Amino acid sequence: MKIGIVGTGFVGSTIAYALLFRNAASEIVLIDINRERALAEAEDLSHAIPFSYPIVVRQGDYADLSDAVVVVIAAGVNQKPGETRIELLGKNSRIFSQIIPLILQHAPEAILLIATNPVDIMTYIAARYATRAGVSQSQVIGTGTTLDTARFRLLLGQYLEVDPQHVHGYVIGEHGDSEVLTWSIVDIGGLPLAEFFDLRSVTFDKATKNKIDEQVRNAAYKIIRGKGATYYGIGASAAHIINAITHNQKAILTISTPLKEICGVQNVCLSMPHLIKGTKLVDTLPLHLNEEETNALRASAQKIKSLQEKYEQAIKDA
Image (cartoon, rainbow, N blue to C red; front, side, top):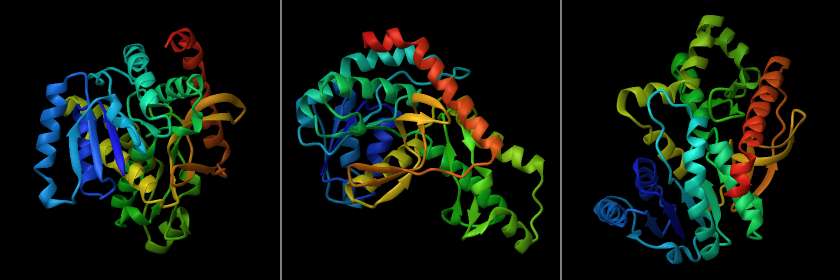
């Protein structure tokens, strides 16, 4: 299966590298406005093929996206220290105005996986392009809170000394400051969190909960301060999504999609758990949240909606 990646900076090239070791593609096409960079990344990645799977990795143009199953969009300006994801919108919406029509022209059947920040609004913009081109907006998904959910499970698993694969909980809403950690529905191996605490005699107080919440919510800012960008986590999470699609895993993923309504907020793009079957979004899973989490999710949706409306003219012009 062919996978296209538009944008071969840290994120795009790391997604390609993660795909090499997933056996999720037979061909990876790298596209970048800097053709020399894309060519160099393709050659460097090819040198890892003897240690992974027989995959063709090459630099290409938009016409080479024909028959791609998934096209990842990682093009855009990187988030700078102290800069919020929302502040990136103006810069990255202009980039999308150039590349999305070209992708849809050559790969109208492909799933578009948006990794560019602010991912919820960029997914919304890409979905608008899809509709304009006669392509279903259900073909447009964002990486959303897939990485945030992984961070949540990792940190909670480390605290509980449990493999994070057995920690079941989600981060939903905005991929950003207003995201919601669904503490009330977390379970460990089928046991509600409170019962697991009692079983293992684990002390868990509000301070510990707040610390984990803060670490999940502000992880990107901390990493960006230290090294200038985040790419390993998002690279792995995007490859995980692609692997689920190409291997028809029937996975449940907290991807960002346009929703008709959430908590009373209409037509907003954010993350909820979705059941994916191949290239199809089968269902959005309703979560039984407590009142505090429901209110927080509504506030997150309202925040994104207000930003969508604020930049509506930019979206129309895109």
